[in-house]
Length: 91
Image 1 (cartoon, one colour):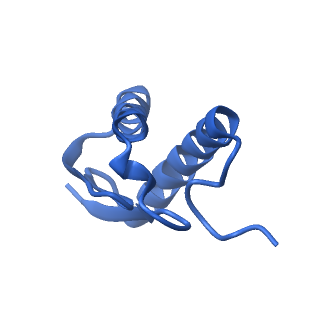
Image 2 (spheres, rainbow, N blue to C red):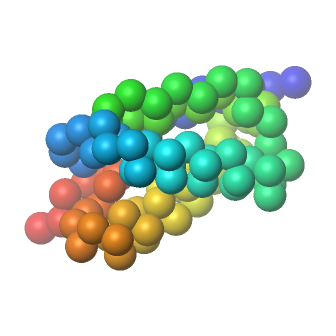
């Protein structure tokens, strides 16, 4: 079985030091994996990033992370009127 290790890093600061943000990001990743039928072999969060080892190839891993980024960015921007959580700074 192939495995891919993927990471999302915050645009700035340490938003994952906030417990509610950290918990939402983790639960979103686990729920997405369950919906997609993807096994998580490792999940590590620190104050500015999430790193996940998935039981898929790199292309499928990119798709997984793109969806995680999309959903958690939308949640973060809506809740905190700030954002995005991941990606590049808006100009």
